[in-house]
Image (cartoon, rainbow, N blue to C red; front, side, top):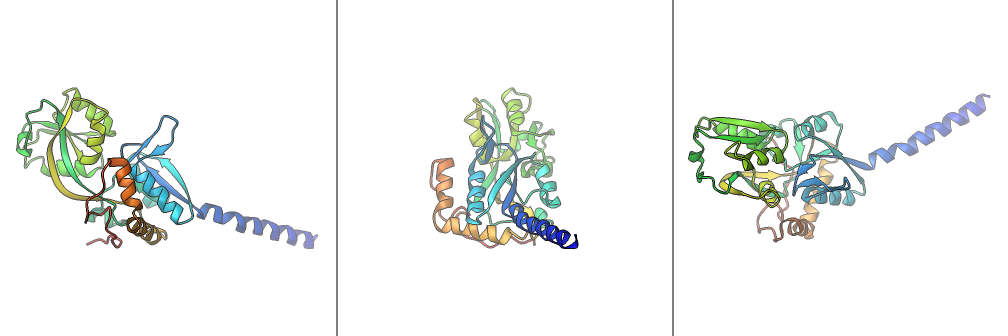
Length: 263
């Protein structure tokens, strides 16, 4: 009996040891599903987008599967911190505040902020926002900019939204003067929602990257994969696929960089 029990225990232990790597061979990615062209869901429920292509290529180069979870933008931060997901994407800017408790790969896109409004809006400068109400997506750098500059430009109110589409529909319908956020995402959304235009471009120096838990064991390998993608032209090809043009020389889309560190 002891012999049989010992054999059974060995078989069970072997099965557990054999099964364990299956989990380690997958990267769990969190993504906000309403953020085109960075990430969005198709009619059949599949994720597509610039950063989805980046993450899939990183996983492929690490010889790992990719599992994508649908999460709200703010939920991405708690999910990486808790270890529920390995990485998060959704045009997440690298900031010094975020680097205090999160890690990022090197950036792969340089961006600016903007204020988008109706095509007949009279707003041409940030000073023209005086007395106006603008909208932001909660938890974004656009929200941070608006709150920090509300008094400077005399903005009457900053209204927070959970989804970019809801914000832009309120702009389209004249409920708010404009929306503040990342320019490429707004430019793409404007192809789907007519009657809008870029009112003001805000130089912010934002750079997007894959975010993860502080010192995640995969972050250095993922960063090397991003460097390799830049070196062999894969990242540039993804840029051209989604934006229709080659990336500019010297931008983070084509320039290999080290892991960002907190200051």
